[in-house]
Length: 465
Image (tube, rainbow, N blue to C red; front, side):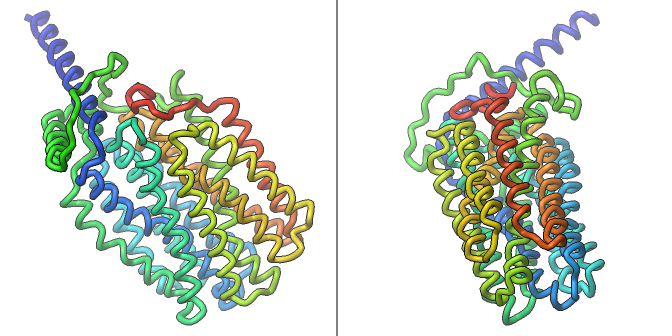
């Protein structure tokens, strides 16, 4: 009797694996449908405000530093507190999303960072602002890795880079919009205006919670095949209604049905361990440079070069705008160039202007703008596409968790950048900051050259069984 039950269980498991593989194959042959575009748009707007919220503090600090008579160390602490919260949020929400699903966890994260943006309006000193920024960071840190896993799982192998990066571009639009809003509002309305705008995302919770479908890949991984099949069928029907002719799904022999649940231990196993370490180096190095620069440059222009607040914010806006253009170009061509080649080229290129700034002495604001901007733009194309690359290097059962733990190093790098700048500037010189960042960029590029696998044009299940 026991043998019969065991055989029956094996047959059911084999049937489930086969059906899961078929559903994945049906997903892979689909074009981008209206429901997928709607999902990408809704999640993308949340990511837009995540980007806005992350950088809003940079445009509030030129006024706050003077109004509250902040030291460089206090300024660094306020900026870094948000990143510390993001570190914790990325780990916790990445773990929760593997167990509860992508959409409910996204809704919680968005509600937290919108509510804490409201709280920041009522901050009365540096310590209260640090606390609210820390709590806000938990929400912003949790939103991005979970959202990126969700969008990644909706796309097929063909042109996945372009599909995903045009979504991720909204994060950078959020960064750039923070500069534009800061340029217009902060000189006239004060620093609180930045946080008032940050309250908007709470309105996004309703469509996320009630009008979007859960990730079919996540459902397949949990064995909830009937729910996954219903979602795939709706996507197929949408494609057919739009006039698309769907080819017959061909199940690749390399597709392995996902396991029900991954673990932290698996992240460090023989297959995924080297990938995890590579991604951690990339997350830390690229974000140490970029978030160090983008959060401190407006303050540096104001405090070191004595620029008016409006002009300091305007310079920061130029830098983020150039990065937005570079990232758009990256989205259009990365499927042709390849992930690995792009990352090596971008990181190597950034070394040149950063080293030049050190050698020149960073003696005036215009020189800093002209040389820091292309370096920032080049590295930004790496930072903004790392969620794409992380999603490709992990299977569905580990995708959100892996991205969450990896982006914890993003937060660590983001905290390290302002502290490095703060300590160096406190010694009376700006130039060594750019030497440190040039070395970090060179080391990160070397790690990519030595260890990064190419992922372009391959299905997620083929890349990460």
